[in-house]
Image (tube, rainbow, N blue to C red; front, side, top):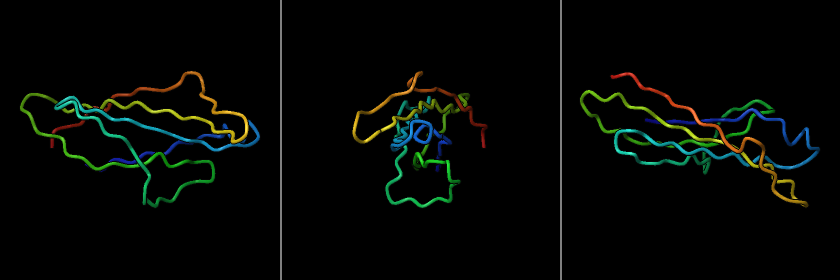
Length: 102
């Protein structure tokens, strides 16, 4: 499976300056392996207010009578450069994606 994600955020613009640093972790329910989305060496077309979180490629083992579920946790930091790193409230979001059998 190949999974990629992006973030639409204008926090840096609202703050006045800074850089958005997104992060995303994924865990599957079959073997409980964790994956981190990274944007090293990747190229995507994005909108002007969109930030690339990253992508990852992985295999999910097949098990009978169990539907694969991806647990996703994501968030971002605002790195202002000269003052500090600002973490928004809430600090992260979690979602579950249930995959169909194929």
